Length: 125
Image 1 (tube, rainbow, N blue to C red):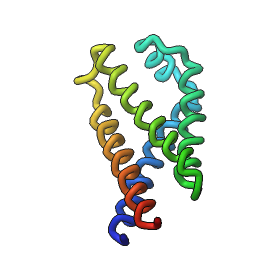
Image 2: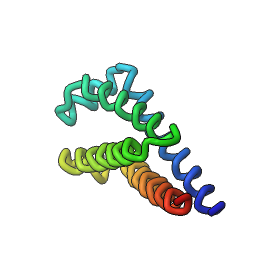
Image 3: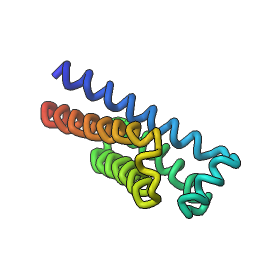
Image 4: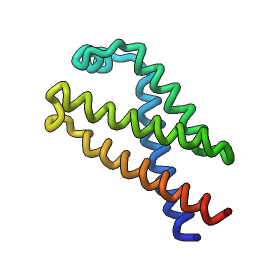
């Protein structure tokens, strides 16, 4: 159980750091972010919405209790990362994007944190 708990916190801290880094960056408008949104044909306001959703997901995962809310947070993070990967693929910039492997690692963090969360939950019952 101790190993699972350590793995859970390692994956969860890395996931929270990834999402927090992404959320904080989305709150600041810059010419680069406007060009990025234009390149993908996204409205700029969607990034602030996603940033708020990421922060709420972080809170849901870190606060004890509410297992259904945690499930939704993990699902939201997975959808966010898969959507980002697909956006690069659909835009034709998938191989050129240097941070796509970072998103892949993010999916590992989501899966690792999620699997360890369920293992810990099963051991407590």
